[in-house]
Amino acid sequence: MLDLTTKIGSLTLKNPIMPASGTFSEDLAQVFDLDVLGAHVTKTITREKRNGNPTPRVCEVRGSMLNSIGIPSKGVEAFIENVIPFYADFDAPLVVSVSAGSADEFVTLCEEVSVAGVDAIEVNISCPNIEEDGKAFAMRPSTTEMVMRRLRDATDLPLWAKLTPNTGETTEVAKAAEAAGADALVVSNTLLAMAIDIKTRKPKLGNLMGGLSGPAFKPIALRMAFQCAKSVDIPVIGCGGIASIEDVIEYLIAGASAVQIGTATFIEPKIMVRLIDELPNYLRSQDLTSISELIGSVRDEEAADGLVFIEAAP
Image 1 (tube, helix red, strand yellow):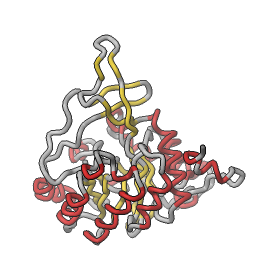
Image 2 (cartoon, rainbow, N blue to C red):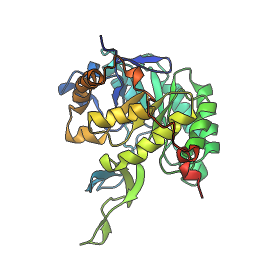
Image 3 (spheres, rainbow, N blue to C red):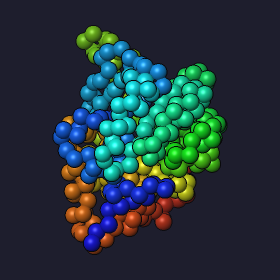
Image 4 (spheres, rainbow, N blue to C red):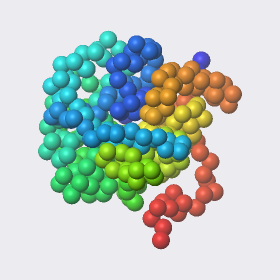
């Protein structure tokens, strides 16, 4: 019998497929059985109500998309009252994604969502940090470690740190998050990018710049997942550009213990179901019996050590 389960710290997932925050909502329960997923990851919430960024918020680019949604949120009270109870009828673990502009806000928010029904907290430390001139916490090891230590003291729930590709210190940030008590790393958030309409000469996003996601971003996120998995002992969850079973398998071989599906869901709402259904076929084709046999199985023995940390090369 094939074993699709995977462990993310203290949590056991029935399979390694879950949504990426911001691309999944309760409405998808009308499309497929949400309990087939390995975990549920909510849309990122903030403590206070937010309207989000100015429109337009999304635009297509070659091979991918840009978004500058700005984390619109109804606030933590509405989330606790309405969203958490919705997921009580499902068996898959509930992971709440949170964002804040300061360490103090993060601490308060994590304390408030540490309630019955929540199985883990995904901390979006890729968001702008008002205490560091708008730079994301996860852009530097020092700020990553500071905020994660404070959050580790604020909750007993598992903490997943969502990292950013907008840094030249990927492995150092990963190690800092682990040292501060993160139970897993989500690698990664979107890459800061831009597009311009050549007819109007105006940026295509109302906020000028936004996050690049989708297939064109996958090689970058896959590289980061590989580097992080080589650098830390906690699980890595791959995220970025997954649109096929081959993409899922690549992340697992690179060292990810699970993956998150984002942009592809906008194109194919049932894609996570399809990928879960296709996993057993791949395992059988390779004479494997479990997902664990794939995780970290990349054959990189002959690669020079420096290649793993190529971003630090002169």
